Each structure stands twice: as structure tokens, then as C-alpha cells.
Amino acid sequence: MSALPDLNGKVAVVTGGASGIGKGIAARLIAEGMRVIIADIEHDALEKAAAELGATAVLAGVSDAGSVAALAEVLAAELAAEGSKVGASVLCPGTVRTNIGASSRNRPAGLAGGGLTDVDVSGDDNPFFRWIGPEDAGAVVVRAIKRGDLYALTHPEWYAMVEPRHQAIAAAFRQAAEAS
Image 1 (cartoon, rainbow, N blue to C red):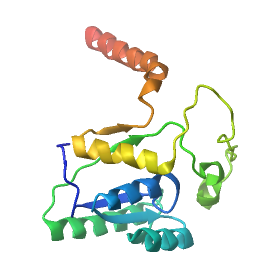
Image 2 (image 1 turned 120 degrees about the horizontal axis):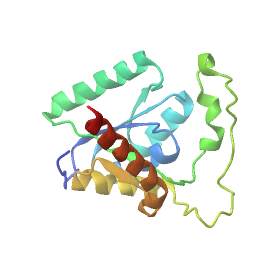
Image 3 (image 1 turned 180 degrees about the horizontal axis):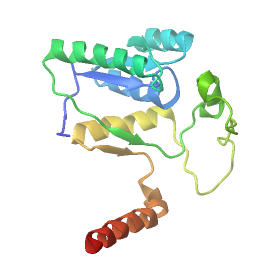
Image 4 (image 1 turned 90 degrees about the vertical axis):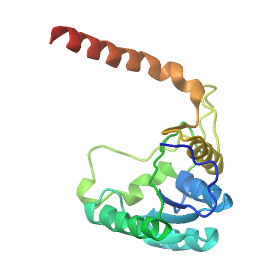
């Protein structure tokens, strides 16, 4: 993705934009002058957030192919109107204070069960966790977009936790290449 240092007048689509990290990202992007479309599965929360932020609301659950298609159509129309190039950033969040502990409220009925339960970890007093707010996560995304970074990392100090896995994957690729 190329850097986009000036976000004013650009268009962004934020999934999960009615609350938590998504809403924090949308708020930061709007503060940068972007036109923001927020998508969420919770109608009332979506409408409230859109009105509060000044964003365009699209009712969409990303686990539903039809909703994703509708979201893509809105994005395509907005981008065509602007003559814009498409960019994407992937947020890799660490511990962010959100309402994810109650996320089963949005789980599609067809995916219910499976032993998943809501757990509130936000109150855990774990010295390994550095908690940030949703708008702090939004600031990380804004910085990534401006710099052209594909990955927006809220907790870069956590690399030591993922490095062994990345090394193991790289070693597996090397071994596979040598074997072929």
C-alpha cells in the first residue's frame, strides 16, 4: 500500500464501526477529514454511532456474504465518485478496552454453541498487558494509513510472543523448498 499522508476528503470503510475499536478508528479517520462508512451488525448501535460521528451507516455482518457484498457495493460507489485508489490496512490489536467480552450477542444463530463463552478480561491486573482505548487504536490505524503500512500494530512490544511462530513457519518454508 502506498503512503497516504493527507487523508482529508478520502473515503474509508470501517467494519465493526458501531463500538469499540471500529468506532475509535472511525472517530480518528473523521478527525483527519475523511468521509467514513461504518458497518456493523447491531442496528441501533450503528445508527447511534453514525449520528454521533457523522458517518454513513451500513448494516452489515461480515460473516454474511450478502452483507459483505452490499458493503463492497457502497465502497465501490464512493470510490468511483472520488476517482480514488483503493488501499487497505490490517489492524493487529493487542489489549484494547472494548465490549468484546460480550461479543456473543452478535454471533449468528447458525454458529451458536461450540463451547465459546464471553469472558471479560479487561479487569485482569496482568503486568504483561498494556491496555489502550479504542481511539488510541484508531490513532495507530491513522498512522499506518499515512505511512502506507499494511499492518497497524497496537502493541509492537509483543513481537517476542509471535517471533518463535514466525521463525517456525519460515523454517518450514525452507525445509519444503529444500525437499522439492
